[in-house]
Length: 150
Image (cartoon, rainbow, N blue to C red; front, side, top):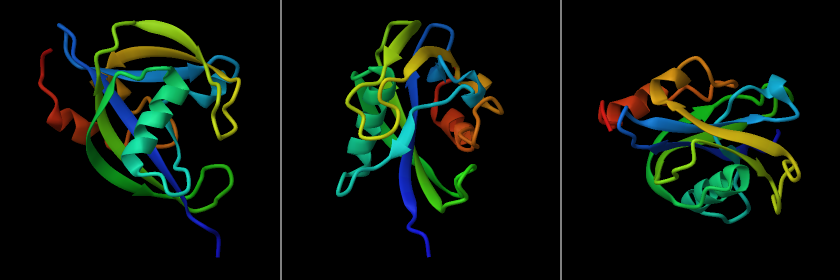
């Protein structure tokens, strides 16, 4: 039997005058990957909330993040390998003020090292049906937690 890969995925939200916005990114050199939220595997012995903060920092460079709550657990095979995978989705908040920036991954323990991610914010509701690999599965639950206006 294959070992289950345990991951986190993070909906990082900031409040604005026009409403809550979600931090997302595109792979500069792999546009086919689609617009994503920070996500990745946990390291041996790493607490899930530490993995949340690490993944956000590695993939976007944002460190001003507060973990709010877990939203749900997704159990499904990896879309390319078919290997078993469990992803715990989290809601986090940030005070990040930049609207758009490029971030090069460095020091990652995974295969993302050297990749350049184009980071930006979108209105949270626009994430429904936008994110690949069912990363949008808990967006509706996230919207239930957020105020309608910033």
